[in-house]
Image 1 (cartoon, rainbow, N blue to C red):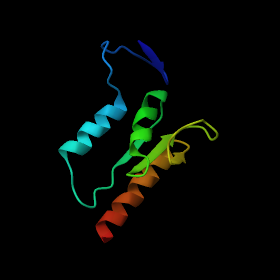
Image 2 (tube, rainbow, N blue to C red):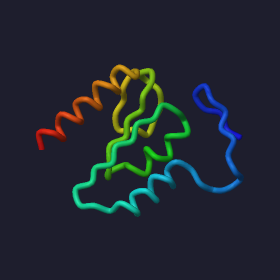
Image 3 (cartoon, helix red, strand yellow):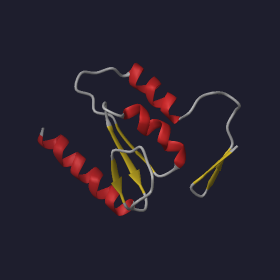
Length: 94
């Protein structure tokens, strides 16, 4: 059992975390030009942020100054919405 942001995670007793899940997903969808983007707001997302270092975009959503392995920070869900809208615009124009 681990605690997170307003959640209590009950997990099986196996050595597997969100970073491992990201690795597995990237193995199954290898594609030239693929840019993985991972947004998270919890301590349980830190493993995924570490996995994506140098090969994707990791974004922590939460208060400024929060220690995180993420490459970028957004303060709240409003900023997440703006980020995703801009990503969609860039994709459409490409």
